[in-house]
Image 1 (cartoon, rainbow, N blue to C red):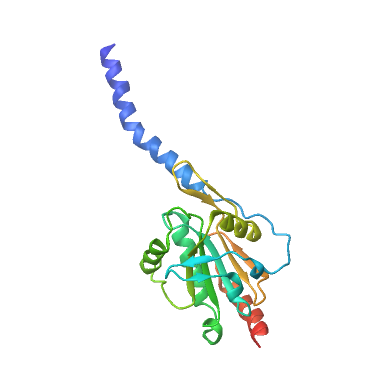
Image 2 (cartoon, rainbow, N blue to C red):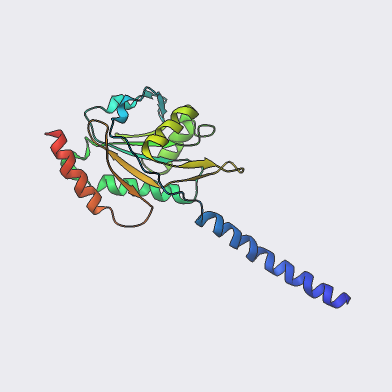
Length: 206
C-alpha cells in the first residue's frame, strides 16, 4: 500500500507541470474577445476627452481633424497578443505609400489606466522602437477609455490578476474621424488594408 501511495505521488508531481501548462495555454488562447459591431456613422473627433501621451503632452481626438488616423487599443504589461497587435499596426503603417505616410497618424490607447502612466508608455514606445513622430501612446481616465472602446466596438475586461482580455482590433478613421475600416485579429495579411487606406486617404487629402 505504501508503495502504491509513492507511485501515485510521483505521478502527481510529474503531471502537475503539464496540467499547469495546459491551463495557461487555455487562458492565453481564450484571452481574445470578438470585436462588437458599431452602429454609428458619426465622427469620433467629437469626443471631449483629454489623453496624455508618452511625452506628457495632452491631446484630444479633435486634434486629428483633417487627418487620417490609425487607432489601436492595447496595454503595456501584455506579453501575449498586444506586442503582435502593435507590430501589425507598424506593418500596416509602414506599408502605406511613402507619399502620404507622414500625414497618417497612429494612436495607441491603453486599457490599463492604473499602470500605463506617460512614463511607462514612454518606456514601452522606446522598447518597441516606436517613439517616433506621428505615433502617440496614450492613457486617460477610465470612463474615457471605456467610451472610446464602446465607439470602436473594442471589448475588454480586467481579470483578477490585473491583466486584460480584449479584442484585437486595428481601426482606421478617415480625415473626418469616421470609421473607415477595421482589421480584426492578429493573423493574416495587411496589404489589401493598406491599399484601401491609400485610395481612400488620397481622396480625402486631395
